[in-house]
Image (spheres, helix red, strand yellow):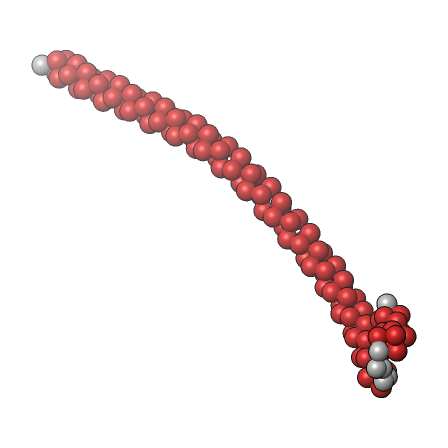
Length: 121
């Protein structure tokens, strides 16, 4: 009876060993499959990150260009303001000189008008 018992125990142990080996192999296959999926996902994320990084760089370059254009526009605006101030002062001086002129006819007024136009030009 002891031989039959040992055969039974050996058979049970063989089945357990076979089941453990099959389970380990399945777990190993599952881990490899998950690793492959993770690598695929990582590659896709790296591509997305690269695209986003290039888009951010493009936006930063556009913002820098807008800042430079704004600075140039501000400089042009300041120059135009200074020119307008100078022209306004010249016009005010010419208008003050014209206010003192007395004319009855158009022929009397034309020299003063010509002087006003020359000083404003």
